[in-house]
Image (cartoon, rainbow, N blue to C red; front, side, top):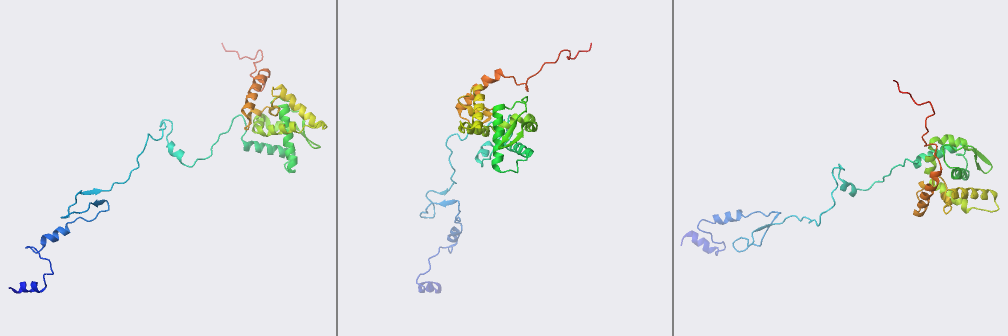
Length: 274
């Protein structure tokens, strides 16, 4: 027995036997094993290091759409993403009406009227009574541009010339009162509810309001007897139908001279040059 064989027998065969070439190919097989990949998952190995099912890959989960989705918007009309605009937080929007003043403009004009008579520095009850007198005057006299400006507004024992208000409002008179349509209606309701047979002033205001309402065919809704009632924002459907019927009754018999086209006087037609 050689010396090498005697050393192996002394170690008791603790080391595994190597092949004829010293285990060279066994080390190469271990080194060539693929590294673990985060996107690849190997099937359980079997004898010999070969997977039965091969290598499988985990694909990302994609949500499956059901149906046709939102209705597309005509790109010829809108040059932006309308669906995205609807999904984003909504903003307030609005538009002004040509037949009435904006609320802020009407408020500025009313404040100018207060300053005109110097009541803007008075207590609130005096200013409120002045506004009620102004709104009730509009109900019983209208807002015609050709209306006579004679008359006064009274608050307690004080009076205010109506002509100064008409001059200040000018051609914006109708648009001003239409901005306060709901407030004028509220004043008329107060006049109707405050009827006191023992108070001459209360009876007078109530009678004036009823007269205008009957002339307009609004005896069922006398609080809507003013010119600007159709501009109200809190009217019921029945009230709006009554106002439309009132217009058909009143307008054919009333000539709006402010909007009427007048014919030329005789002899004023331009003569064509020959």
